[in-house]
Length: 99
Image 1 (cartoon, rainbow, N blue to C red):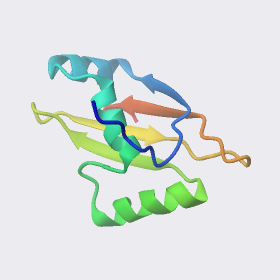
Image 2 (cartoon, rainbow, N blue to C red; image 1 turned 180 degrees about the vertical axis):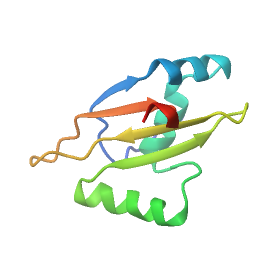
Image 3 (cartoon, helix red, strand yellow; image 1 turned 180 degrees about the horizontal axis):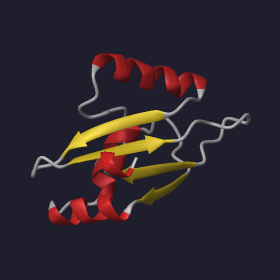
Image 4 (cartoon, helix red, strand yellow; image 1 turned 45 degrees about the vertical axis):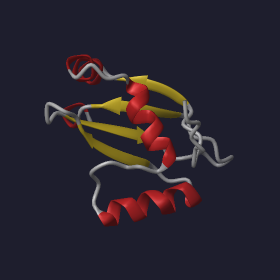
């Protein structure tokens, strides 16, 4: 098993019912996406959003990753903005429709 070097802290991790269903249908675990998100592999976001995520790691704003699964379903992973002490409250795995 390869250990990842996380680029930021995720806070509490949650997933919506729709995301859990999509993960189950694709025989995937949420960790497969969360580990990519933490490592700075933001999936199918465009270059502007990729750069915004890198800036968000520095300035504490929201971080968004978007992934296309084997059945072409899409899931997002969103880490909330940091509070004034630099703590991020949570990271959520969800379908775009659940946003």
